[in-house]
Amino acid sequence: MLKGFKQFLLRGNVVDLAVAVVMGTAFVAIVTAFSDGVINPLLAVFGGTNNLGLGFQLIADKPATFIAIGPIITAGLNFVIIAALLYFVVVLPANHAKARFLGSDVAAPTDNELLQEIRDLLAQQNNSGGGKHEF
View 1 (cartoon, one colour):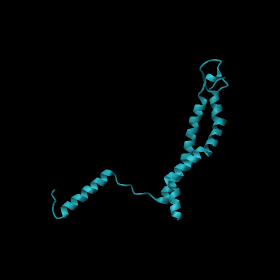
View 2 (cartoon, one colour):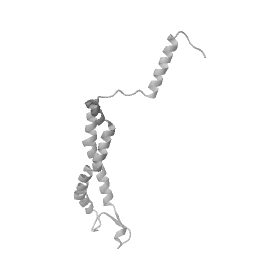
View 3 (cartoon, one colour):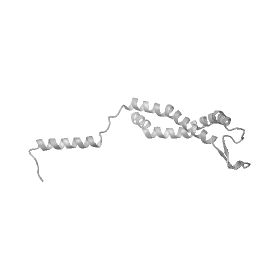
View 4 (cartoon, helix red, strand yellow):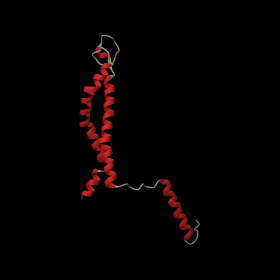
């Protein structure tokens, strides 16, 4: 019973689901706090004296036409940070646990290998099966 539960937990679908849940909750809060506290002030250095942040204004004197580049850069950095954290904290340990507890599976033969085996078996059958059959 525990062996089946262990195989269920180490199956790829469960790990993928866990990665998605963690990505959607815990790491987002941490990375957002890091972005708000560190990345956004660093990007504001490049934004000049504009209060709206890093970006450019399409029409002067109309704040609604401001195109903000800073949030796009922040979102990209958030994505990279979250992906790196998940890979090193969840995926690598899960793969290591899978390899340790389930062992390495023998690779399935390719289509060409299977066809070669069938060809060889048919050749053996024709050579040792009491002559050739003609149709």
